Length: 481
Image (cartoon, rainbow, N blue to C red; front, top):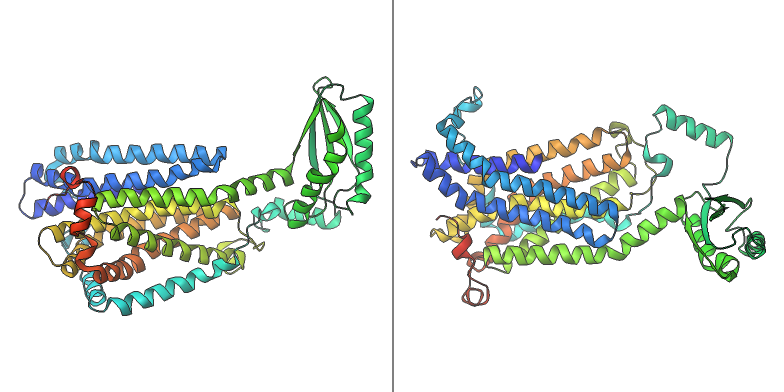
């Protein structure tokens, strides 16, 4: 929803602006297609590239989310480049009607933002000072991520104020017991025979040998006409903590190879809550570096081909990582350390759900490019038209401030809805995403981006060496100047 509205705002704003400059609707739409339409295409491709990184995790849930998100964003891009201009052409100047009183007195077509113009002008005048302060602020916000502790929420998934959770906690306090046991699923031939029975008996003997890592009572159950044997083995710990993970490793690496592993003709696998969470987290940690490399690498290549510069993609990636890091820091500060528990209605359990940081990274990285690509395209358009590097930065941000601010407000509002839900994972997701978008649309857009571009000057956009090294994609994608 947020992405589709953003793209519509970008296109409609540019159409109104060109019409206010004296062009008819047809010419205004043609210019909007070559400018905002181009930015929409690039930003949509960046979002889809970022989400495609989830395929590298090898986890079905992430693959499903990636497919769904890529389809949705692709449809939003396609609609913005085909259906939307058709509707705008049909409505013509009617799109300017229905203005809200008082707000409508200020023309929405081509008005600059006085606040952002003054701010950006001050930043480009002293980029080192402003950029340095903003960088220190974001690094300070990101500092708590150094103490990030990944752990499944378990019973703390819902706040203790929920009646059923309160009842579960009371029952656990009154009748303490161990976590759900590990389920050793055994398949093969003659599961009811002597060899398997002796192996299960030997497994009982491993309780003392493993120093209480695995516990009694070890029970068995036969299923599927004696074709599947399930051996339930209680583990130490609370089910998802370090003690349970260590006990799981002991069961897999020592106890089972010494018992069931000695029986020919059978195979076994360990399932259950502890094993499932452990294996999910292990697969995630193994593939995270590849996801980061894939997303950052392809995004760099796409932006380099679009803007014909290595400085622009490098700067954009660094700024996106800063905003994502700040969001991570706030996530740790609020949810892991337990601040704002009352207002947000959750109970901190001292950790963050393991899948959230990766999922938030790919989504944030893609979505934040909406603003960057739109603003950078406008700045480059002005620079190609003859403006100085600093003048293009000031005018580009001032002219795009209104629509980008509106788009950011919509995005923040959509993600904030998740913070009102009961599951703590949804709260973390909502607060983290809303904070990152807000930081990106204010500190990054208003201070760090213009500071970085001011320091780079004309080098940010072109050099003789890059004109020779990078294919001339501008012949296809160049905006109307």
